[in-house]
Image 1 (cartoon, helix red, strand yellow):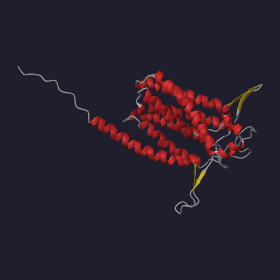
Image 2: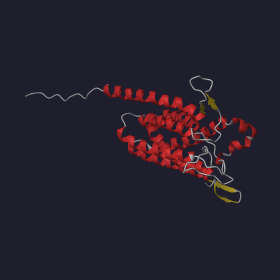
Image 3: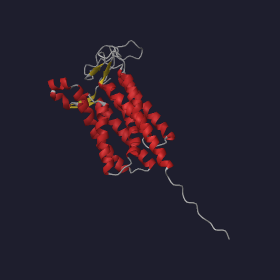
Image 4: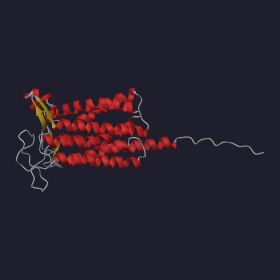
Length: 279
């Protein structure tokens, strides 16, 4: 765990930023290659990826600031220190979807087809990005005595020091890699545009909610459910709370898009048979 790769004078290269950059480059590289495979214009996909990159960083940072607004009110200069960590995946996703939708509408791209390309690249990017979290010590886990527990000792680390913790950053990184491989395999069985997209969001919502159980870093507001008789002593983190509508929307969109694709296929008129006269 090395939050700082190296420092030369006043210049500091942070591990977190490097791995996030590697994640974006890996995701974009995959997207361009897949665009060529499915017949989409790689140049338009590259332009789209550029805007998504900006939106993802801005949205993820804004969401992190909002869920930790009390801390940033006390220390407003910390808002710009993104190299220290502090991004919320769902925040980046929300703003990226908005920007991507506008771009695809203006350039007349098949939105679901393109999103299938992008989410697979996004899962690959998540794999590398979470390694950056591990290097910085952010998104750390709860204390544990499991054999694979990790103890952070670097004083620059954002994690709790000298305590064996769940390596939740590596759980998330491995989750990104597994999702990437699942989505790659799903391409062979794809029946309609958008299938890979909704599958990703459903699987991510479930797996992210599970990983959240083992995290112990400050994550902003927590929705306490103890006031509800059916949920005694139960609470949800902000990401778990967001995961609920994401999972439900993914299920709805899966059946909606599948039905629409079947209706479109069934509604096609068969080609007219060539008539031949008898002599």
